[in-house]
Amino acid sequence: MIDEIIRKIIREELTIFSNEIKNFTKKDKESYYGRTVLTIKEAANHFRTSPATIYNLIKDDGMPHFKIHSRHFIVLEEAEAYLWRETAKSYAEEGNIYWQRILQRLDWEEKERNAAYEKALKRLEESTY
Image (cartoon, rainbow, N blue to C red):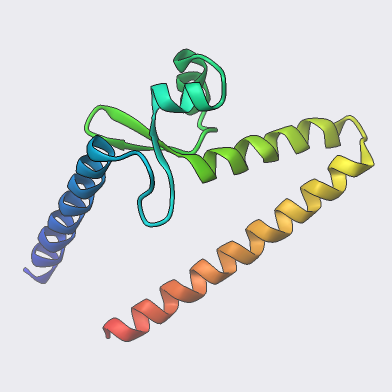
């Protein structure tokens, strides 16, 4: 019974959150929680490529995105970080020391971000009990 109530609350919260993002992206393309949300077409224009290329990147489980109903949305900052990392990887694999160091720095930053995220989740869990 409690599980059902929790699931219902989570579904309601996710629906509200999804609707907020959907409504926000319809009104203004500036930012959501400090991040820029783009449609596929807007992302393609930003990166000077075709929407098909963006869809291929998403399909290959590379380009970070989220989906509301049947529409895909790209968070610009995450997409830029992804493309920067992929560029660094390709040049680092060729033996370029400059790009190897950039990739090491990106790996370190990601590790720090993940640690901070896990720490925040633990604090959240502790505060809800």
